[in-house]
Image 1 (cartoon, rainbow, N blue to C red):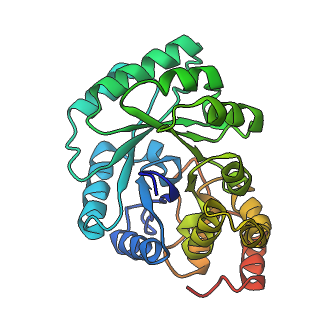
Image 2 (tube, rainbow, N blue to C red):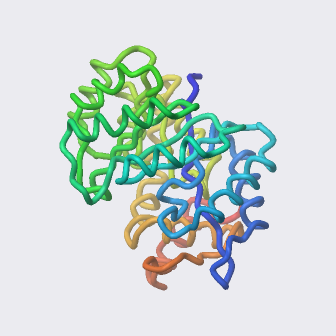
Length: 295
């Protein structure tokens, strides 16, 4: 399987009731994911509540995960923003030992042009000692990295993949059709993973995989190896649950599912809030219906 193929998981950051990182739950979650068959872990993506963690917290969390994973799975680190110089400085001053790649989200709020985003990523790729994965998620950033821009950046030696969460099937199809052979397209939407793999994507960076790595890994691998009927059954088994996990925001929903599985509590940092009782009960009902409560 290619370097960032299969099931990558955008890991949540467990907190305790005081809002501090819960390292015991971090270890429990990491072991749960590795035992469930994940192919790599993304630390401090959006699902990890990266906007609300300080630099020291991020480093201590990363160091702890590197220590407990013991190179059993690759680690990708989330590092992006809307100040190109600051991101490049952070990259150049960071110890990248043990890290396999960087996931860098499109610049948000500034609303740069396509040319501006291309130059932003070129500068990141130039200073990064590890391969760069682009992350296009217009629903969060307010900008869309077009297929043409992605294909231009795919020519850069150190830009190796894109996590595509635009939801635009035509755009993603164009990237897959015209990309270099060694450039990977990765689904950024759990619910679109099966159709995108059918179109040629090589896997997913998942939220659902935090709580349900075994069944989601099985679906991804079935899809990748042509067992479409079997993968379709698992896709529909998880579909309603996937929708529920995002109805009140991410990672509030997935943390609720993790709480129901006894892996970590559902504490999030403001401005996020835990899901409502109604959504919590709906998530639990879906989990119970499909025998997904027990770990």
